[in-house]
Amino acid sequence: MQLLASYLSGSWSQGSGGKSALVNPATEAVLAEVSNGGHDLAAAFAYARDKGTAELGALTFAQRGALLASLAKAIHGAREALIDLAVANGGNTRGDAKFDVDGGAMTLSFYADLGAKLGSTKLIADGEPIQVGRTARMGGQHVWARRRGVAVHINAFNFPGWGLCEKLACALLAGMPVISKPATATALVAHKMMELFAPLLPTGALQMLVGPAGTLLDNVGPGDVVAFTGGSTTARTLRTHAKIVEHSVRLNIEADSLNAAILGPDVDLSSETGGLFIADVVKDMTQKTGQKCTAIRRVLVPADKHADVAAAIAERLGGIQIGDPSLENVRMGPLATAAQAKDIKAGIARLAEATDSIYGGTGDITPVGVPAGKGFFVGPVVRSTKDPMNCAPLNEHEVFGPCTTLGIYDGTAAFASAFVAMGQGCLVSSAYSDDRDWVAAFVGAAAPWAGRLYLGSSKMAAQSPGPGTALPSLLHGGPGRAGGGEELGGERGLQFYMQRTALEGDASVLKSLLG
Ligand code: NAP
Image (tube, rainbow, N blue to C red; front, side):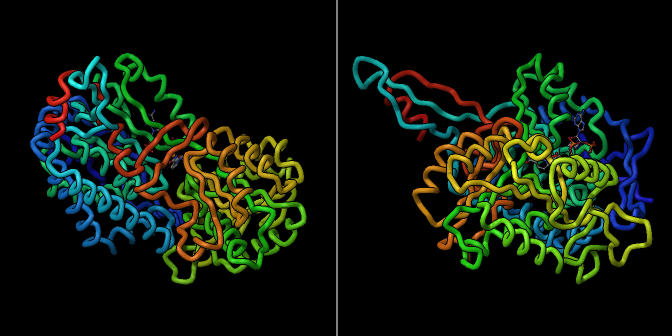
């Protein structure tokens, strides 16, 4: 049995003590094991501070961008092996696996290009110069400067490849060394990427702890940052961690999200916009078996379209084969872990107390190509409510799987945006409409409650990746329940890893500092 090693202080170490198993969630076969501890994490932090900080600091943005490009190339070179690991360890179909692996490479490439654009500048200007004195001689200028410290990255189980790469791209380009911790259950893809990346990066630039966090966060200090993706319960533990509090360590949280999708009153289901809406809802339920933080969980449709929407979604779902994701005709695999499957069943049972069944009952299915009784499978489930505003299980609890709930509404933008707000802060919500006045009214009221608003319409339908895809050029994160964090968003993604400093002095000196 392979015992996965961590990459710490410049070498691979297997740790010691008890072990956790990584399994294939379709068959429950054990694929590898990982030690639950036994690593010298204090030494890893010292290594990053001493070696990684100096090595990355000696490079320009353009050179660090070139490193990211080499990582993207390494992923392309090992793409098939990475996809196979994601299928085996993540319960991913081949399409799901590509979404994770290619998404990681694409994000690295995006930030590689940004590095080339930033060139050899040391400071990045934040806004225009300001006159702060009596005359133009006395000026002010905000700048972003490289922070000195360690970036700790803690990732969720659902995107082991993309999650690693999207955080890594921003931190390394900004010049901070990284200690990355993938979720234990699905760590095989991240572990393989670490094997690919280690020979390509400067000493101390990237380390990886494979296995439980243990005392990882006890080592953070002033200047360090922690970027976390995962559940809100873990997020709460991090927010109150003694070292994070003591040193005011910057903490970015990407957590749960009750993303909404709203069908505008103007949309005919047979139109391009209507087709996009149905396709996006079904895609978000089944891609990655609904285990996307950006997936649509709550759907709002005008009352007179409810029956047609329910029928269209049910028809699409009925054509989706569920089972062992390594089989060619299977379009939806299992949940990633037994705990996930249990949580989702509990979430569906809770919804069932307050909603009606449209499709899939409580999610019991017989998957294809799987030994009887094996695998962490839950089938797609669609529920429905006539009173979406007052449906507590719908608006309070994220069912992180292939489940969505339809609610009816009066077609007004005011109701639609209030429904988005009921999620108490989400990563993304979407509205499908070709009525610009309705869209404007919706956006104005819904924007404070969402990190991203996706506006589906006939003009963009043919080229839309759907609301579930987080793009490197746009912010990923959301207020309130979603954690209050921000990642990506082009150059904005670097800011978490840099210090904004206000410079005040002779305007010509300030100008020369920015080159
Ligand atoms: P989780 O249980 O919170 O775990 C997330 C990560 O935190 C894992 O790497 C986990 O390590 C680690 N962790 C657990 N306890 C820790 C502690 N005390 N100190 C430091 N690290 C700790 O979440 P999950 O089950 O992997 O992910 C599911 C949740 O993530 C869902 O609720 C979903 O909404 C959310 N999510 C959000 C986004 C987003 O971008 N907003 C993206 C994906 C998922 P181990 O695996 O070793 O326990």
